[in-house]
Each structure stands twice: as C-alpha cells, then as structure tokens.
Image (tube, rainbow, N blue to C red; front, side, top):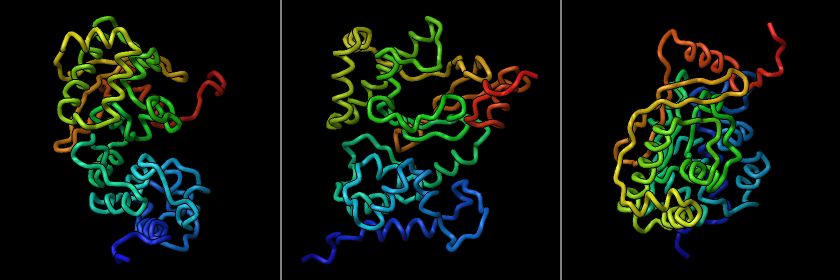
Length: 288
C-alpha cells in the first residue's frame, strides 16, 4: 500500500495538530481561565467553524470520516490553514481539492486577519457566485446570525431574485442597479468558470424560478458592481443608511462587502451602538 495514502485516523490527528498550534488571541478567543494547552479548545474551534462540538469530537476521534466540502472550508478558515494545508485537509477527508475550474472560496490567513482587525466596519466575503463565505461580528450584528443559512439560502442573488431581500430595502433605482450588476457578475463568472457545476445549477435554477432574472439574462447585460447606498432595517436600532463598497481580492475572485457611515451621522451612532451590544436584542431593554 502506498505510504502517501491517507490512513484511518489521519484526519483527526491533523485536526488536533492544527488546533493545538492556533493562538486563541489571534482568532479573537479570550485567554480567560486555565488552559492545558496553548491552542484552541474543541468548543472554541467548533464555534469558529460553526459545527457542533460532538461532530468535531467524532472527526478528531476518527468516528466521522466524510465531512462535506463546506465543513472543510469552515475548518480551514477557523484553523488559519495555508493553501497547501487546506488541500491536504481535503485529501485526508477523501475529497479532491477544489481546482481552477471551480469558483474559489479560500480565505487566506492574511485576509482573515484583515477581517478580524477591521472590527469597526461590517464586512462580509462572498465568492464569485454570490455565496456568503464568511463575515465579521459587526456584520452579524447588523444583518443577523447567518450561520444556519446553507446552500442556496446563503446566496445573495438567489435570495434577492426569489423574494427574500432580508433587512435591506432598495429604491427602484438601487434595485435596478443591483439586479443588472448581479446578473452581469454571474455572466462574467460563468465565462471564467464554465465547468463549475454549482454555478451552472444556480444560473439554470434562477432562470427557471425568476422571470426578472431570465429577462436580464436574455438581454445579455454586462456590468460591474458599483458603490451604492443601502438601507438596513434593524429590529433594535431602526433603519441605518450606509455606503456599500465592493472590493475584489486580487487573484481569488472573492468580494469583500464593506459598509461604512459618515462620521458624526445618526447612522454612525447606531453602528457604534451595534458594535457595543453585538447580537443582543435591545427590544427587551426598558425604555429610558
């Protein structure tokens, strides 16, 4: 048997080794309490990767051996794996690492540090198909916990064109720009990744499900995202109108969505309040 083939238990050993080397402070985990090791506890890694502690234990003990690519991506981000380590993780789990024909979703450790350190700005990262890859804590406080959104539910274009706009409202002009730019983005992505099956399936299903998407697709619109304003309706602090900028990470096709407010504005004050309370629900607090 080849010595390079993964063996039973190799996946668990690798996860434990990578977990032990992560500095909790680097990933925003408090150092409180007595720690038997310098690395992350299982509970902490599970929270960062948004998987259950029980499932992580089974992975590390070799009792669960076939995690999905989505779980592997989440573990790679939480563990701050390099590109080569991420590929090794996929192979240990019996998956072929995503190749150049698939839309990239890899968050490099340096990009993750950028997201962690810009904690005063709501930031999210989407791939070239519009799928939410990751977000920071302030984005979660603004838009709500998205950890339970899986598959199409985590795709911004699917949700918009099928009627789930979430807490964001658009003027007619803003909606037109978003839809034209979104369809233009998907058309450009389909040209760059013609063999990505998930992207092809998304476009086909949007075409069948949304007459508006089909109309724009058939018109062969070509457009790039532009800076715009968004109004987000938060249940605790009310409506917040913010500037929205789309930044593309060179060489990865990832899009960083950044929301900012004008200094001294009412919106800036509401954002500071959200930064202070996180995902707590202020509606339960007494009036003052």
